[in-house]
Length: 392
Ligand code: LMR
Image 1 (cartoon, rainbow, N blue to C red):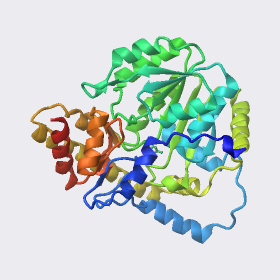
Image 2: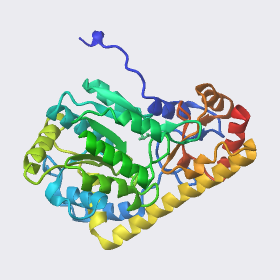
Image 3: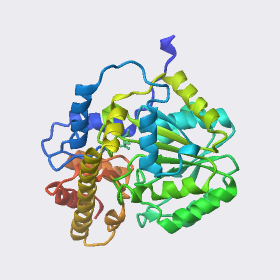
Image 4: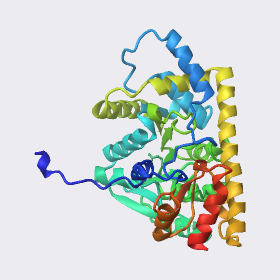
């Protein structure tokens, strides 16, 4: 049987991790996978996570199964963090293995509810979005998003494409910190898009993987909250990998907003999908998050550290934009300072990206997405000089 299998295409982001690891050069720079790193290159365990782990180790009495949806306290804490108060009556939710698990379950829910629904994706988007949709055999469509020349949003293109959304289609929106471009809609643009989608009868499907990495914990949830208040049905796939730094614990949540009358049936379907795919969701990371969000001191400490992380990335953005101005003697890359989140798409060709890797040991995704957090004060000028030499 297994001889019938064909090789699968490699995930371009994960492939880079291996290439970087196998590169013997001492001065190599990793700007690939979206993992936060401090100035020394370490992805630290956050202080509040360590403290919660210690407390959990001391107090945990059992590791027997939780519910299929995970612990209700985790869902409630995540709904509160993402949406604020007032959504409990409309919100069904399940814990999932990471943000990817939430995306997968959301897609399966869409397929279960309406197999004919197309899922609309921004062009570009995180490559695993189309990959999972294709794997599930679901109809898919694209909307323009990025203005590669200016590093901003192609808003006219986006609106023109989304005008073709059919009633019942799901439109995947990056709630903040767009991956891979780093370019984000402003509040007015969000309003305009939301009104169009509402008029088209679309179901917004928000991917929120970087809350707290852009403009702040509350600010990064603003678009999601606006959409939650406006639409009768919304799907939200959120990840704790980045903002809690618990990547390998696989901690995510899928929230489905519906009417209070329909909530129980939607919740039952979410539970069903968890049962079909993996039964019970991972608990350790979810429990830590619940403890942190529910404890005033731990929460304050976590928010303070998250804010340090965010400000560090903002300052790296500014230094890189400044260094690129100097190195290229142009304002071509000024958008790097305007972008938000971990990523910026630089607008280099694949050949230039390859040259940076081969000649300078600088690793970025083939579409020229860089992970800002992979930089530090020492490497910013090195990157700027290398970019100027290949693209100047
Ligand atoms: C990324 O885009 O680099 C992250 O979301 C990690 C991943 O799984 O691809």
